[in-house]
Length: 229
Length: 229
Image (cartoon, rainbow over all chains, first blue to last red; front, side):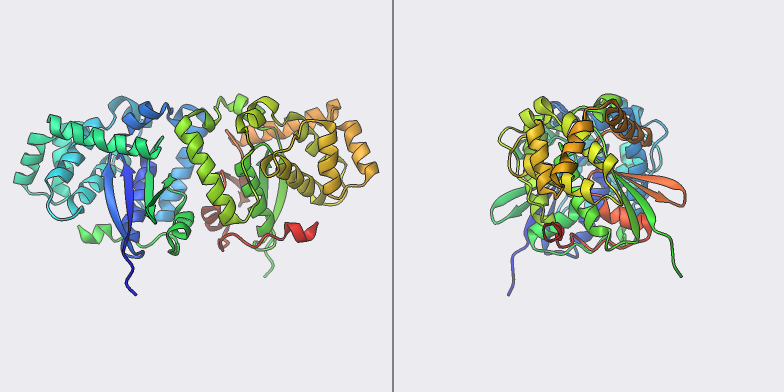
């Protein structure tokens, strides 16, 4: 008997390293579980402000732990994540507003599926959370888009619209959707099960999520993203 | 070839529901993995103050999520956890200082292994996180100890020493050990691997922990604690 695919929304921001882990795992499980994955790029800064949450890294012991935790998880999940030299500068001072508007613009103008938004998001994570490179300047965004396989004319189009009111509103609206679901950080994964949204925060609930949607957790799957590019 | 058991320390406080989940899972895996589990009752209030951390439940969206998350995890892990009617009252106003001193006293005077401290801890969790009962009054502590199988004379002994300076210092010293390892909350599980401590915070790193100590995560195991009592 054919069963319809369960819809899973993944809210993320490329400034968040745990989001990268969740993103790669969910992208891999698209081919393992009977799901339809909807990428929902949003703005983490807006989520923290809207929910009244504070970044966990402000507590010194938590910051030290997260550095170690991320390194272990990255190795286990086979994601080339490496902390930048100055994570606070990257996360709190430079931030991701322009990058996420760029991602929203890519999603707005892409045709047929989330392939471009997936690739561009991955290249932005790679810049910030693997190669310690900037993601705020237009030149940085173009470079990421080029590596993601967008053509020069596509990149030009995206650069033309990513600071427009339309795109600002689109990103804001996605962030508001996340807050409405009850987000207080990213990644936030929303599984639609029998018409009811089940939320999973973070990148450490895959086994529980599988149980919830009637699938099986089979551990980190091989990374095929590099081959796809 | 015989390999020596890996030592795993579990720092916990019965005020913490995620600690209960971690405690039950680790107690079950004592019989699955080649490990020596050391129970380290400590005082969460001291950890929060010492690390400068704030309880996560103060952010409304986080509180709502945690309630749902705990219910799902409790079901999945088969732990009879149920939120008390007023969690804030239980966790922040009444607290667990006297309960954890009581647990420390049980551990101080028990003979041969952690069986009594395990049972008393479980009964205290059951009171606060399943039956919505007090854990601050001496009568409450006695009742938990009685259910845990301690004799009247053993309970009398524990009641005689649990407010002594010796026991206060013992609990403080365990909490300081946790802080020295880098704790900022509970449960904090410290695996000693090749002479190096590997810390895991929370009850959502068992699969990673297994990988780290060269064992296999086999999902939540059947709850045998009820049969043992």
